[in-house]
Length: 123
Figure 1 (tube, rainbow, N blue to C red):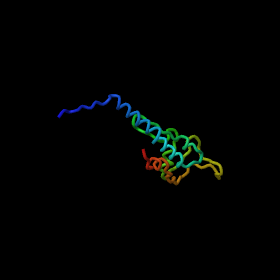
Figure 2: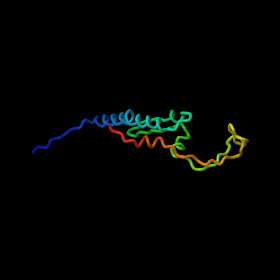
Figure 3: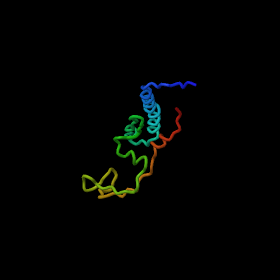
Figure 4: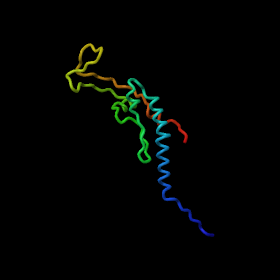
């Protein structure tokens, strides 16, 4: 019995990789990004506007690159002390008087990225 040989086009891997990248970026990435923007708590809208989806190779990343409190919103924070950086005291509207430090009780998590990531999706 003769063995038949199958030849695979050498460029097929590049085509498959390109298709995977396109699917990650334009289907899955877009859907996760939309869900995260819908789920994120909105006070100023800065965090929602900072969310991005990008594909490098076959890796999809969704999140914020320039909003320094994105992780704190997603994961919450523990109790911590707030100290002034550039002045001798802290003050804010409606404060009775300036203070040297604030004992912050922490914040509860408000997950938006993980629920968006873990949505059941179909191809």
